[in-house]
Image (cartoon, rainbow, N blue to C red; front, side, top):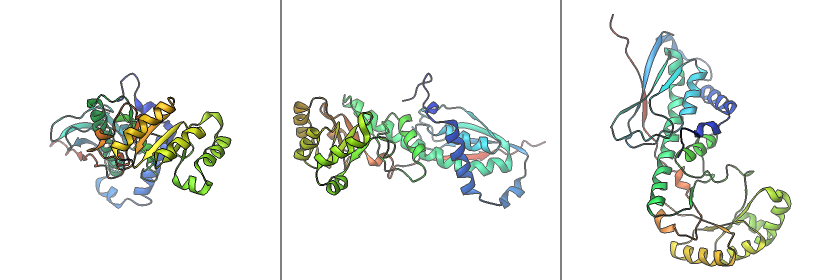
Length: 296
């Protein structure tokens, strides 16, 4: 989880925030905004309300960036990574600015916050499960992210206390079943990948059996993904591989859910990755309510 001394928001380049905010605003308002004529440019105040108790707040840098682009300010009551608490409705931030501008930013900003907070909340729950089991490994996400929204979703994993895993195809070499089939063998695939990526990138191989895993480790893979193993066979295979290749990292993946996570944890498993961190993850319910002007 983020700390005040090392906020995760510092990992996002400012130009990336600006670029994304402009893209989202352009998508939502590509030309005219007829409703903007109705509300005008008088200064208004809107309250950001969280209506999902015990949620982890994530995505505030993106939320703020959207409103900065339209000339509004945001004052946060709860900080990034905070557990918003048990109340049915919690005041989370206050947004101020010209009415038509504030409403231009409303939906893109809420979309980011709802999605990011939902992912961070799920990651926090998964980390709590791992901690309760006394497990010292890493809960990780995957590349199963929403197109165009990966930076937000990967960032939300960090806020929730999970590992991002690799961010993209350039981040680490992962040889999956299709790579192996197209190459002819695991050994050949690892050899060719090493000739390209050099010393600076790790190589991970997706394996469907203990024999494939042993071949991958012998070929020089740094990480073995035991894919779609049942928990019992996973633990046996992981222990055997660790005994033969002590420096090897073992990742469990495939079919792991929040409910079954604890059954995949063992001292011989270093990483458990879950596609459900992003796929099918519930969002956190936020709304933005413009306050009526005080009566004269």
